Length: 215
Image (cartoon, rainbow, N blue to C red):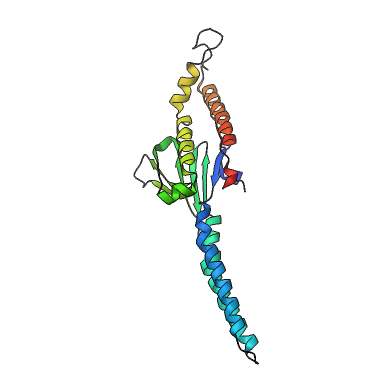
């Protein structure tokens, strides 16, 4: 499902939209199988008689409550957790009834690190930590799919968001052997538009290479 455009700025594009790794759903699936199996077994043990229907209904109600707590809730939590990388920022939204969110502007990011255990290396998952300038704590993104790829992508987005790097690359671009400074826009509005267009094209190419449909 694409991220809602109404939450993005006019010149902002989504580069990657992720949910936690599929291993997050492993234990809910195990609990589902156990609850269904146990409920079916106990329902078969209910002795015949006038109370058989009532007892089975009570057993069914208990099983549904357990499934709602042990299975449905973690699945909804996984489905409603969004990690979105755009051309301007990192957005995190989570929560079913009570929504929580945090945004980190790429221009304020100072470091991006990745940590993976041996098991996470096997399943291609990991924890990505984003540190930013300011007094706030670092943004810790746990159980991300393809954490190495996300780290590399985020580092590249931070580089592209650096206006000084964009200006330097534009100013040193050759143009038919002429004056390398001749095509630099004289007004700030033109320079901003040129840099925004360059970042947009780079982000579009990068989004095409980074296949988030797997997650």
